[in-house]
Length: 107
Image (cartoon, rainbow, N blue to C red; front, side, top):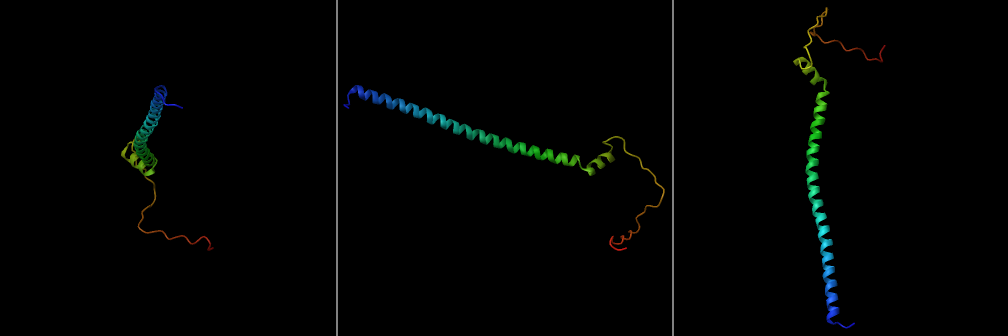
């Protein structure tokens, strides 16, 4: 094949078109990669915030379900009227410790 000006022009146009296509494909894949990095960083930050919120919610639920917390709230009157003291006849002092029961395997 002889290189004349017409062939040179065709080769130049093909080279230019190939370069443009390569640039567009490279730019598109580069922009996708960059967008992926930005999204990953943003989602990672949101995931940390969500994890902190879930941990706080778990702690609040645990404390709300705690009988000590509920008994304290009842004593402060947060759950309605404070219960009165009920007197029961008998001696319920704790001056001395009770003797331990014998082991179950001894008659």
